[in-house]
Image (tube, rainbow, N blue to C red):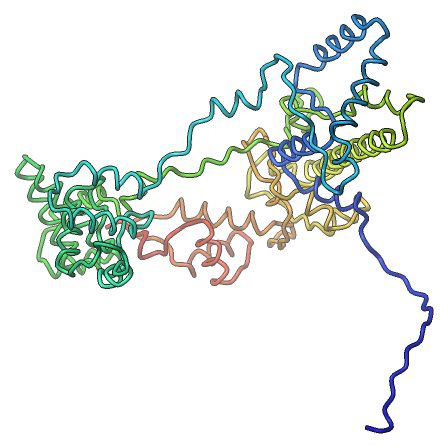
Length: 500
């Protein structure tokens, strides 16, 4: 230890590093946005940047006319008014200009209707959650025992979005023991759950399993049925659920016939009743998230030239521009240094965001033109004629990075003569058929769907038979690949597709 010593020194080293400038990062972010996300981003930028204006579709002429009218009404052409307004803003917001925080535009009442606020006012309100709706139903139930009412309300909190209560009652009891007045016995919780299953709608809500939900619903149908034949069918349906549940899930109809000794028509009537039951009864009360899709590109067929043409779907999209007023302020010689610096920085940021949007649109259209040229057969004949189109190849053709192509098509949609389609599936690898023609893997997947759709439902094809059928069509793939594509298409296996 006696020989150790520490030394410090300075030195120079030459090297190269690569980093992304803020402008490049902004361009990459804008490129990846779809139409709805871009509109939201522009609205945020307008709120942050006082020199950036949003022009709604169809209103630009009116805005220009109002601006000209304002300048004509001003005795000095508006320059002195703007200069004085900037001085007032400097006095009011000077501290914010000197701080690191973002400057926010003060709210102004122009007397015009705000389209965004109108859209928000006309939008449907978010629906109540499943638990809230069930609690409201429970509040109207004729339950006079306060302990049972409280226990039922507590159980409802454990019901999932499918309408099932799969948490053990003992767990609910333990997790509620610290709450005042919630020291229930298991029998109280059981009685409350039974009452919930009888009171709540849709029927089956509160069941502890899918099987119990089906039984609850079937018994309600049986109690309400007045036709004797239908009542007998519902009784058979209940017996199938109680005694042959696994067989009916696996579509083992002959085995059920063997066990019950029923003729085919009797079992068919029971199975028809089962189709009226909902294994997830709570879904009827859960409002699905409705995601609107706005196309970024519109593809049309030109009968005169025989070509497919593309254009941006921006007719209803608001546009942004640099405020002419603040561009004019940059030329005012009487502005002090602080105000001039603020205006110049705001205008520079506004121009940067506009350039990023223009670059996004240009890149997107370049990629779309490659798609139209390569995938013409898809537009004319359908998904089975999709060609392989790796993003690397597109990037080489356009002289851009493959990540740029990926961002350009990410979450983008295209309105075509064949409907609204996502752009991403156009870019996939593929194989060659027996004739040497290139086929995208998505086209092979579409062929699997067509083969299954044309099969004999009484004798559905196995995955191996589907692979053999594809091979006869000139496409050779493994059986496990057929399984993967079948599952991606939501197609059941052969035994479950069989119609007895």
